[in-house]
Length: 180
Image (cartoon, rainbow, N blue to C red):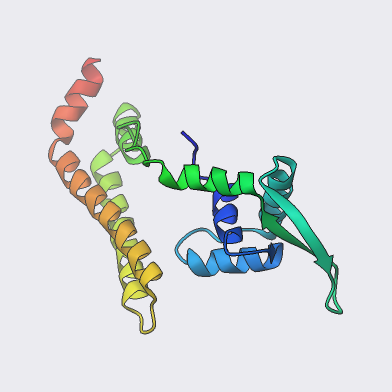
């Protein structure tokens, strides 16, 4: 399995034709509006690795009256790597323990208040859901933005349902944690 990485995203953006690193960063941030924006250093480091690994090559350089800019393009090998990655099924989460659950158990172990923690986490999730709903319902929101927000909203909703179930079972969980 090939894990998702910045390299695959950049290869995907290069699939549309040669591009400068600056333009790749801009297109990434436009195409994946809900993702963490890429840092320029990350873009250029990744491009250097793509060239080193034979997945991209330098098309040329130009300056257009400003600083010299390098143009990159995907190689045939880069296209095959991208095709292979894009065709792979994304595996379901491999582990059932997550950070929220871990904090509930640690709170029990440390004599804290797991119910208060769950309520605070629920409040944070609800605030993020309001933000995402505003983003997706904003006038002019494109489909990629709406779909990204929907994906995140569904995950947050599942977390909220889990938190409700967990809060209802805290007494039993506390007994089990102390018994083991």
